[in-house]
Amino acid sequence: MRLVPGIRMFTTHGADCTRCSGRWKATAALAAVLAVLLSAIVFAQRGLAAWQASGVPPGVAVTSGFEEESLYAVWRSLHGEPIYVDGARLPYASAYFNWLFYSAYVTVLKPVVTPGTASLIPRAGRIVTAIGAISGAIVLFLLLRRILDGALGLPAAVAAFVFFGPLVGWWAHTVRPDVWALALEAGALASLLAWHRERPWRATLVSLGCFYAAWSFKQSYALGLLAGTLFLGSHRKWRHALALLTGSMLLWAVTAAALGPGYRAAQHGTFLSNTFYYAHGWNNLRNALEKSLPLIVLAVWAGTRQRGRDPHPSPLPEDATRLGWIGVAVSLPFAFAASCKLGAWSNYFFSTALLLTLAGAGGFSLRPSRVVSSIVCAMIAVMQLGASFGWAGRVHLDDETRFTAQAWEMFRSLPEPRFTSENRLQLPWLNPGSPALVLAYNYDQERRSGRPFEHGGVGGLIERGYFASMLLPAGTGDTFLGGKLAHYSRGETACGLTTFRRIEPPPVR
Image (cartoon, rainbow, N blue to C red):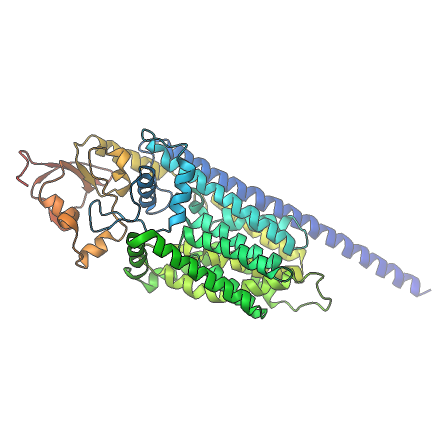
């Protein structure tokens, strides 16, 4: 008789557990749907903002810093001009990203941009980058789905967060190489995980091609390659690891030889002619950690939980965990060091975030938890909701568009040849009668260090009265970029900028 109540109690408890499990399953599914939906909304909002800003004259409102350097390099390539030029000679410009970035964008833009429609370069180029973000998210989703035993919710939420989330942010809508490089790196890592056990040479060669393509967009995307090489070595696939590493180095050497001294000089300047600040790197690291919090929660939980006794039916989660943690360990110090560079931002941690995602997904698959899945997806949803409503981050370019339009109204009315401290307004299609002085980001640093520039640089041109007019910061004193303003009179001031007009008659040059 006493067994009956006990049985009833046991049965009731089991039913409660089933209902509890069902509730967490529904919660995890709902959180994943919200995470994906809100990530897509934020991505679409930023894409629409970038599209609209490109249509407001002059069409170059900022989405990310120093974008104008890439826009100018693409314009030069479209017009058959060399990309890698001496930054000490007019127009003191720089192109320091790798060759495939420029070649790929120019190939896509050639049918769209004609000599008379160069103003389409920012809008069309930003679309190309957005396509790269979508492509990378799809590749990562397919990889995570395999790691997580065919699940849909968590892989979709995490993949969307990596490429549409706050860390990548506006980089998905700018003419820069980072997003496509990250997507190609994701493809390389997916190839390694998919084939290294059964078809190791296929894994090695396909990943070699993807890693080289990622590096060919931007040189800093070699961290995934380093992680992949060490991963193969950890499986005692020494020949494959050696082939991957030496093959990559050989391709780099062939590239440097084939593209000539201009290319090599640009790469030398990129790596060696820089100033590094520890505080700057620390701020970038902190920013990256804050924007990667859901990925950190997933990885830390998976890494600290005790593994279950039953072996997983597939070795893929263990491989993903190993590759991910190896990658985080080797990439984080290098990413931090690179982020200390003058002009660097948290984009140097993109590869580390991708590898952290693999570590978390692999560990989660070995010990899944709907509670943790719900928490991670809910965090993603809350962060993206905050961005969508402007509580954390932003999804519009209203201020940038307004400022750029006001500055352009002042600048366009000035006689040419003209110059402005607003680098974006120097683009050649905006000033057909002026040299396109889209100054390299480190121009002033190199000028102060004593590097000689043709004609004395911008300061030398100013002192000779070369420019008919200028638009400079309102607080400018008697000199600008080392050149005395004796030949110019101050004019009107608006939006923090002041016009300067050459005193006529022009001085003898």
